[in-house]
Picture 1 (cartoon, one colour):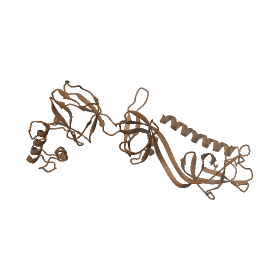
Picture 2 (cartoon, helix red, strand yellow):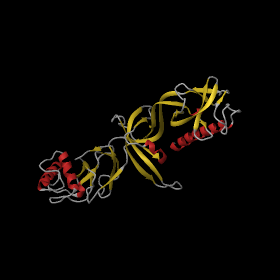
Picture 3 (cartoon, one colour):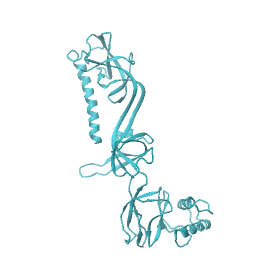
Picture 4 (cartoon, helix red, strand yellow):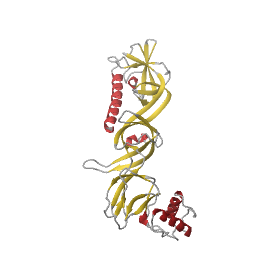
Length: 355
């Protein structure tokens, strides 16, 4: 869809330039304009149509197809021996301190953090993973220790209280497989194992809890992928939802058959109203990006541009029954118009147009 859109846009631009060149080369036969080899000057032959230079706000927008869902899916694998005795239902939300699944009827607990649980932790251990554990205990309301990188006797005491609240044996140490770390609350997406299965393989997949829109942009559309930029999401029911780009990441789409690998810019978009996407999942939406905006500028229809023999572009100014060619500098293109500036060009100036 995006490729066909770009071909359409490119075709219009090429056609416009080709038409401009053709106009410059067929002066007498066409619109009475000087050809590319003639000198610009004043002529009495008027163009078949005219337009006025306007002062306005130009907004260059571009629509792309996006996918509304819950973001990237991650797989959670069990660790160690045992039998799976409970898995949250698909669609359930699991928060800090809650069981993300149970093995032999004992909870494996979700905590928040960027480091994985890669070792058992006990008194005397030190490191950033200790700080991560202690921060979670503090956020869950446990006290009596200092959040730092040292697992002390005070930390062990808080761990025993936590284990008691979970119905676990109060050892004061934390097994690597007892906790799972994620960046925040998670939404269970799909079961990969069922109750009664061995707990050592893939158990479930999960996503973010908040629905988002993702758009994969081609490299040439990188200008659209600006974190923090406002966008509009057009829903299948016709609603328009105000949103913003929250993250942009580079992704490599692997080769498939005769299709080579491609680099894309993946924009993740969240609604301004956190509830706007509630209850929605797995649907295609249209995202309107604003590629550029210029306020209070002079603009003419793109068709008014002429390719000049010396290079650059101009417009045919119509004044007092005569015409003259004026070179112009071009700015933003948007909605069939282009920003222009040049000597004698002002709001209300009449310019020639092709018939």
